[in-house]
Amino acid sequence: MSTRNLQLSKIHIAKKDLGLDDETYRSLLARVAGVRSAKDLNPRQIGAVLAEFTRLGWTSGPSKKHGRKAPVAAPDRAKLVGKIEAFLAEAKRSWAYADGMAYRMFKVERVEWLDPDQLRKMVAALTYDARRHGRPES
Image 1 (cartoon, rainbow, N blue to C red):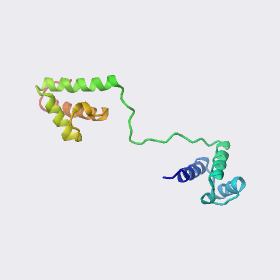
Image 2 (cartoon, rainbow, N blue to C red):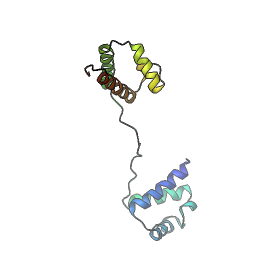
Image 3 (cartoon, rainbow, N blue to C red):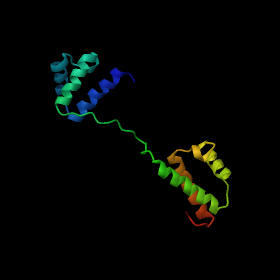
Image 4 (cartoon, one colour):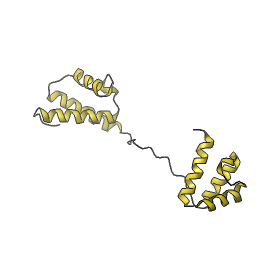
């Protein structure tokens, strides 16, 4: 998406956030930039309109990252790998078994290459396996 389109999107988001009806919005565009439609704005006018929205109390919030989880710190990653190791030891299975699981589940060849979310899913799968076979859960 071009910078112009992003800026125009911000203008329309600000219009909605400020609760401006169409007539009020168009009169603001006419007063600030001398146009009746955002498509007619040049880059300088776009900046002026956004500055006016800011003056009116609108703040541009940070972009939302839907579906993303906060990164897991290294100690938590080490705990997850430790849990996987404990499950493997309890079941008398090798790391090759875990690497095979990683490949089947995520198409990643080695457990050590998994991201924290994938490690959590692997721990969940091993927990399920331990329950199913009557082994204690780590």
